[in-house]
Image (cartoon, rainbow, N blue to C red):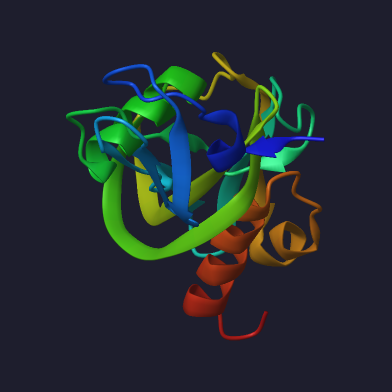
Length: 177
């Protein structure tokens, strides 16, 4: 069974002494009083559009949830904006360049398990168009395909965040789905 970050972090990163739980998002050192805020990790989920009705989805090539459908994207690195992270992640995963159209929403998930630790995620959802390049799955993606909005709505996504991103997109940009 996976543990939360609250359960895994036991020692102060400053002095090495014991941490105590203050509440559901804060640990504090029992000696130096350093406060460790446990904020969600920011990610980007990108809906790459093709025409009016098709969106690009990827198949995860690595765990967690290897082999399931997902939105392309990933973690935002220190120093990056959400838009910069989206452009970088899509280039790494699919070998294409995109233009980010807009951020259309955010979502929260506390279901992402990485190396047996349950990590809270804040997903920043955006729309994009391909501006150049040829799709070629690489990095942590094993496959990719365009789906109609109806097909995408019926898919079983491995990660809750990806499912929320696709549902939010379809709700916002479709009249008949």
